[in-house]
Length: 279
Ligand code: C2E
Ligand code: CA
Ligand code: CA
Ligand code: CA
Image (cartoon, rainbow, N blue to C red):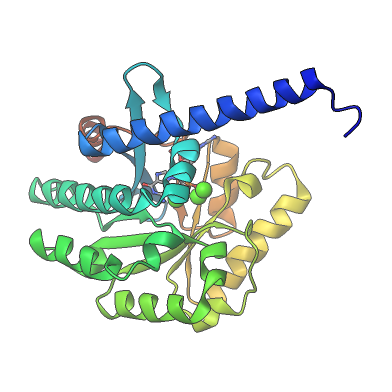
């Protein structure tokens, strides 16, 4: 404390004040963006190799701030979680994605489901499940047309509550995927106790296959385990042909990544889908 001289302290409190200001400013801006409908949803295709087509899309939030430009989801989603703004944000994302999916199906696009990212705060919110069922109902869709993506950490927060919510969703056929699989803190026991459909293998394990023997061991083990448990797998972050060839060879049925498409605005996604069908 002795060396923490006056200047040092001023600098410290100034930095802190700036950080607090910055956070508040961002929070205010996010509230406004939500109120004024300034967020957007982009969609990234999920490719099924055996079927050779886009079978699903993942909805990802986008925020273009008037002055700051594009703000990365990882920063505003975290802020939204800390401020509970994730509840209105997530509700809006789900309704928008479900509405878009209905439009696409009406126009003859053959997609099996749309996938949305779900934070723990949303999952444990009492209105969460009913909100999803209402949105599906409103658009004449069934549970199987929707997938929610949860991280392992969410499952570990409150296992019993999680189980109840997931069973309700499962009863209506909503698909449940574990996102970023392999990166969280969790036991594997939940895989046989919870109604899980899909493991999304985190990009960090995919990045260096097939070159890195350690990553290959992990990815092959996840896929073998998933299959024995009757779960499907999606590899995230596939960027190269080598990765694709390898993943195909080891039996990973679904792929997602820049090799196929970046997350796209709805018009671009629809165009890509049309082109891929025409081929
Ligand atoms: P995520 O759910 O793991 O989403 C995949 C992220 O990887 C996306 O980043 C996507 O653009 C990126 N990605 C996809 N393919 C590739 C690839 O081949 N290479 C590389 N380098 N990256 C790829 P994005 O859109 O920036 O989203 C970041 C994270 O923010 C998401 O990670 C998700 O955790 C969160 N997020 C985004 N939208 C929502 C939302 O609506 N609700 C919630 N709760 N979280 C969201
Ligand atoms: Ca995800
Ligand atoms: Ca992921
Ligand atoms: Ca993530």
